[in-house]
Length: 252
Ligand SMILES: NC(=O)c1ccc[n+]([C@@H]2O[C@H](COP(=O)([O-])OP(=O)(O)OC[C@H]3O[C@@H](n4cnc5c(N)ncnc54)[C@H](OP(=O)(O)O)[C@@H]3O)[C@@H](O)[C@H]2O)c1
Image (tube, rainbow, N blue to C red):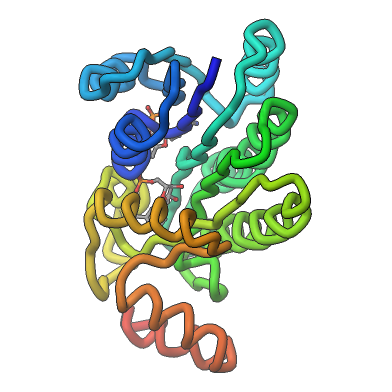
């Protein structure tokens, strides 16, 4: 059984990835994973491929072991794995609760690595892994310090794994979106810490770029001119300067 697995498929970029893989991958099933089964059902109604709904809080180790068990029982061939489940919190460091900070690391880093690990035995030459980082991965991000650090983890992890898996013909891409119109912001921003957003992209455009960049065997997907410019600036300029520009944008 050929399957694609999408974490965070209940909304935003994950839902768009499901819509695109439904059309482009010849799968027997698409597995949709997140905490809200009713929202996953909504995604499922938009797809032609048969779906399997997996209601799981991926920040919990138990959820990872349950999915591992399902995999060992069904032994699917995993054609695509898409790890979009993630969240951010903006604000002064000590103002964001310890629980939220730890949960961000658990979901954005630990669960992403763990899902990739448990899926790996079911991948073959040609399998694809989309790991969702952010443009925040390219530089340290004051006032989103933990979030930026989690995404730097995803970027580093994904690129290293892509190189490691070259011989096996399995491709891994770090998708690094700029600001994108999804539910992300309502969870991330609760005050006026972030005062200026350079530009918003659509989840559809981000997802399409991810597929295109994967087909070109890139190891990073950065959609849009502003995102690409951010990536370049973070490569060329001292990070102290890049942080100063970001802080000035936010009147800090
Ligand atoms: N939007 C942006 O501006 C932006 C920019 C750069 C990077 N990103 C990254 O892109 C990815 C997708 O975000 P998005 O913009 O599409 O935001 P979104 O609409 O809020 O989607 C986040 C997804 O993650 C799932 N999720 C959250 N906590 C979870 C948990 N504990 N266990 C399982 N699933 C969980 C949510 O589903 P449930 O609520 O149903 O669990 C939802 O499906 C994230 O990794 C985000 O960091 C977003």
